[in-house]
Length: 331
Image 1 (cartoon, rainbow, N blue to C red):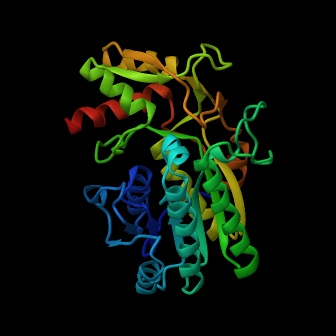
Image 2 (cartoon, one colour):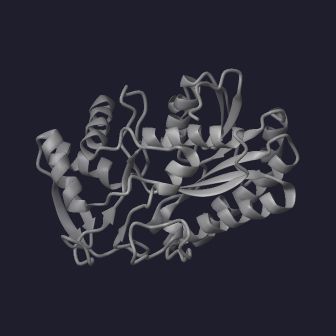
């Protein structure tokens, strides 16, 4: 059963000023709901908040977090997207990653425990799996993350599961694969600073004529470059709406892959970017980055069976075209 509307329902979106968070907020608003953004703006942007109020909240500050939740103590659903995500940065600065991701989530969960917020939808990642030889990846495989980023996200998952058992907190963990693309209407898109993701960096290289970096071409893949499962950010946003409906229908707990089930190499992405933009993408080969995996893509059957989730926007050409449109609008 698909959720037709969220009329009159307020939802706290932690990290709602960020790339994925802003798309989630727009989707909530389109269904008649009110997204309430909690963000410290270390990575998010105030100009991406267009559909509801916001509170400046840093989850690392326990008092600040509790105070914000007390202000909206009647809200029952929290979408948690706030975390540090840059894999290479996590390897260099693990203390900051654990403090922001793990301590921040503990403070959030404690604040929820003391209010009416009994449901959480958590933004996790396929990086919690580590290097898996058998792809597509099922949710049932043993999670053995290689990167600090993946390790912190797994710790956050474990905390949420513990709060579920001890405090009756209902949860859905969404393990995203590679978010990409931009809102088709051009309102919002990918604006990380610094930008570490492949597609926006490749679009910039195409438009500017400058070279981008490719980290490693000797992976055990079809062309030596990493293979990833790219899913359109609007489809990820829809997965949150489907999760809200699943919790409304009585789902108490679940961990679900959110991807397409297909993988594309870096060179395949660059080829599509050249097709869409009409520009050549220049690049230089660099050493592999610590924590990067050779190939990873999702088994999506559980998402469809448990959430009724199917992708709509994630054709690779559409991903690149919407990202390109947003890139051009920014300039």
